[in-house]
Image (cartoon, one colour):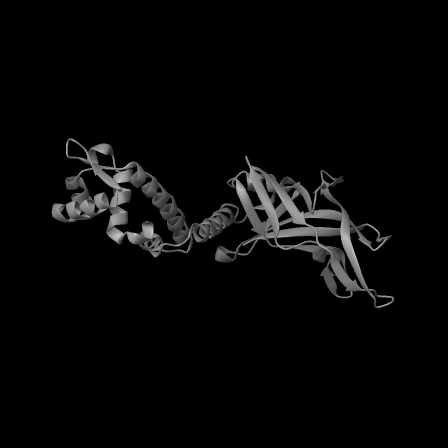
Amino acid sequence: MSEELNRFQIQLLLYFLEAEPKKRTVTDAARHFDKTKVYITRTLDSLEKLGLVERTQSRKTILSHYGTKLAQKLQHQYKIAERYMQYLDLTPLQAKNNALSTLLAGFSDEYLNRIQEQEERMYIRELFAGRQNFNGQELCNHLKDGSYFLPFVIYREHIKNGNNISMGNRGFEHPCELIVKDHIGTIYLTIKTVCAPSALTGKMMEGRIQSLSYQSDSQFKPAEQEGRYFCFPAKALRFITMGNGRDIVLHGSVCMQMQCSVGIIHMPESLAIFTIFIS
C-alpha cells in the first residue's frame, strides 16, 4: 500500500498521526504545510477512498485503524532512514527529504532492516569514538535486542612463516553472529570442516575444531557447544577504537584456546586471538 501513495499523502498521514489531537484539522494541516484547505481536503478524500482515514459524525477526519497501523509503520521506517541520512552528514532538511524519498521508493522491509542495522552501527561507532579499553558488556548496553552479523579474524599468537592468521580462522563460517537479548550478548561461531593437504604426505586431510575456550578474568573458560555452534559471552571481549570520523572501527578481541581433530589425530591445543570488527 505505501508504494501506491504519493509524497504528500504520506506526509499528511504522518501529520495526522503525530500532531496534537486539536490540530488534526484541515485548517491546521493547511497552515503546517503551507497549502490551501482545498488541497488538503482533496488529499484527505483520496486517503478516505483507500480506507486510511474516516469522517466522524462531527465531520472531523481521523485515521482509520488500518490508516493508523500504516502510518505507524511509515513513521518507524522514516525515523530509521532519517537517522541514517544524518550520519551521512546531510543537513536536517536534506535528511528529511531523503528519508521521505526512501518511503516513496517502496523498499522492502528486509532492505530497511539493513539500513537500520547500519544506522545502529554508525550510532555505536560515534558513541564509542575515542574510547579505549571498554568491554563487550558496555557495547551490548547500547544495542537493541536482535542479531548482528560481524566480520572477524582469528590471529595466531605469534607470526609463523610471515603469516599471522590462525588455521582456526578457517574452522568457522564467516561472519560470526552476535545475539543480544535484554542487553546480554552472546557470540556464536558456526563450526565447519576444513580440508587441507598434509605437510608430510600431501594427502588431503579433513579437520574440525573440537574444543574452544575463551579468556575471562585471567583464566580460560570452556565455550558452550550447541550443535554446530560454539558460543561465549560478548562481555569477554575487550574493545579499542581506531581511526577518525567515518573511518572509525571498533576492534573487540579475546584470547582463545582451540583444539582441532584431523581424522583420528587430535592436534595440540593452540592459543589464538579472536577479533571482531564493527565498522
